[in-house]
Image (cartoon, rainbow, N blue to C red; front, side, top):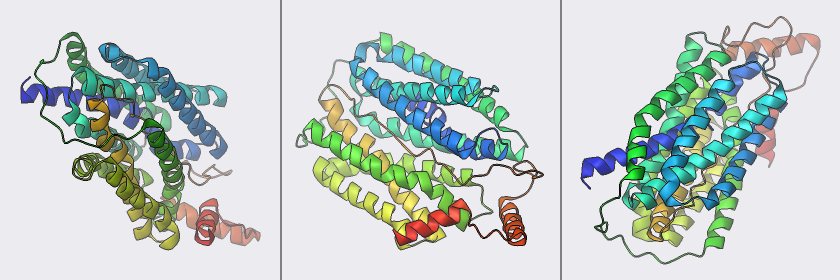
Length: 382
């Protein structure tokens, strides 16, 4: 197979992950503050929706354990269609329980995209070297979806229009990727073996599962509360921009950790990776400042993509790749539910709304602190 053909297949697989993960799963991080500001959802509702998405992702990953490489291209197509449908449905007015349910279903399709795209490229198409580009699709999807929402916000769109925008772009990306995925699923790759990869010491699956779970537990907490802390330190900055920077940092990290994995081996690369993650988790407490928060996000995003780009090569060499779990923080921000008489979200800059809220509380004798300030204090005392 020619190099341009291999590149097209890797880009198409990355687009599947950009759709299923970057749009279907993580775009909610940037859009739910708008839904809070519009009064569409409360903070509790958003937390339930995020939890349902995690549960759906777990269910989808378990169901995808039965997937086989020859049928992976069909699962990729289903994941694109299901993600686009879920994003479009979320633009409709619906009760909270139905919104939470749709987010859970979207989580199933996100897991399906992760496993199916990994099986298709790494096993069916035998492109272990394409793992970094494949998983960079997640970070690229996060960045693109976040900046699309920033643009929609500047245009004065409400959350319903934002969901429709995401659904429309998902359809366009899917139309670009589906022909390559479908044709690749029917054709047989070249029988010639790929270039020899460095010999890596085998690692038992259950220790990897345990490490993966503990790593997820660590960075999920940070990714959940980091945007709240950033919003407190930089109140006049659109939090979606910070989320886009997170995605832009995650994409090249796939290539970095893939190279380190080949040079150092699985165990040593994991030790270094988890040490950086621990530092990233601790930074908001050790350095509670804007620089500390942003560095924390950089270290955490560098950690998360090693689990795909680094270990994917070893999994593909073994014949199947099911270590494609890519979880992340659906951040829950401070409670932005509108009070009576407040202007809609976006009509007044965030820092002005915060200052006005402090003046109102002082005039009313209410000395309660906002949720974000309380959270920062708790993390400092942790």
